Image (cartoon, rainbow, N blue to C red):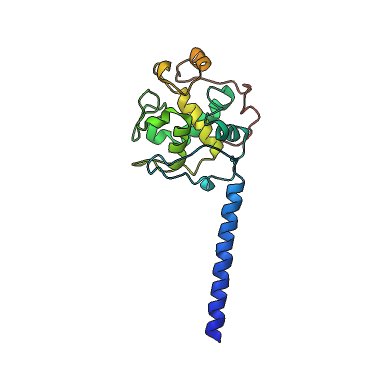
Length: 201
């Protein structure tokens, strides 16, 4: 009888744990904005598990817009670039260099992409969030919103001919100015990130 009681107790606990895991997963997925994008791992081609994203920064206007269009709304938005620079320097420069020139990892500031799909904002997001080959692991340490800001900064570092920058609109290409070391951005620049008071780590 004692063995039966123990067995039933273990089964009950396992069921509660499984149910809890299901509830946590369902809750995590429910807090993500809807998307029609087919987001895939750059290396394996498997669908990205967006439930791995940090809870903070999931449902911002920028993330919602990106999930609807596949286009990073922060590109060339001066209110977002400074935030993107700070995150990039902390999370990416160790491998890709302070201005995207490349170190352990490939350069990010020219018109050659190790993964051609990174020419698109969706492709670059997939590579950053889900990781790729070699030492490029997934960046679950960044929020979805931070990834979009990093992407905007990486695009801003571009130094080659804008003809080879399909992520820029025609208007953005016309106004694009190559990055210069020491470039500053006004603290009160208008844009999508102007009201973002999130502490940059």
